[in-house]
Image (cartoon, rainbow, N blue to C red; front, side):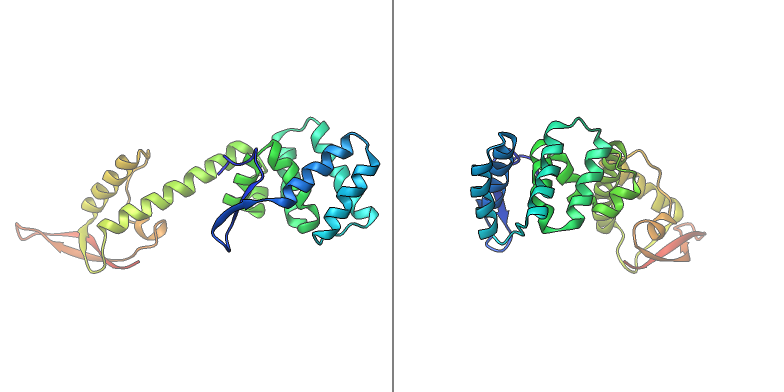
Length: 214
């Protein structure tokens, strides 16, 4: 996801092709000219922005580029950068160029935002360690779902011990340090289960569950 941050390549979901990101190019060009304090060239880029349907009123444009310049020259913590990035993304198109400036320098911001969304990132305090952990959990949960769905089918019956055993095999296969619990099939992984008695070969009956559905 992060391999194109040093180019002007973007993926167009509509056409299904990689294309030249013209707005990203214009944005970076303007930021460069702004750092050189070249007013004339800045006006040229401003005209290009206007032609690409950006709001180029004085307050809007220079407000945006003050924000851009701030992130170019200022030393910030990850928490500060992540919080600012989420704020810019919530403001929409007029701050897309500031977001792009941050993405070019810190491509992980875009990755976290696309994986978790602004609200969840805020709930986690914008802390990178917590964001990484959240993504890891989500990816692991998806893998667990996939493996469990291959084992537990509707109308199948298992003893409680057998469910734990099969779940532990899945966790071991995925390298997850966790112990299987029959109740977790319903609480964590979306299965609908119903208690039942499972007949054994010796005539005994043991507690277990019937898989009702998913």
